[in-house]
Amino acid sequence: MVILDELNNALAIDRFPIDDVLPLPEVIDVIKNKPPHVHLVITGRNAKPEIKALADLISVIEPEKHYYDTGVQAVKGLEF
Figure (cartoon, rainbow, N blue to C red):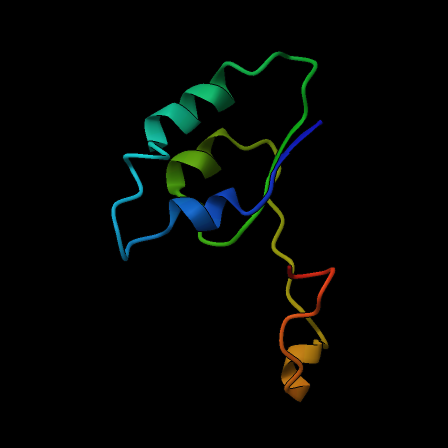
């Protein structure tokens, strides 16, 4: 299993050019050419339609209760 944590968020960056370091065509090539025995997990919001089209499974997880709602900022060991 290979986990590309928050890859979708990285690909969604639009404040500066991301294609020079993370070109979408190269990501798509990696997904299409992964070995059959490898399970590839890509996390993050705002997945590109091209990524979704290649997915076998897409899950959306929504918080029911989150410590952010009480004003707690990022927690060491979880968010950083």
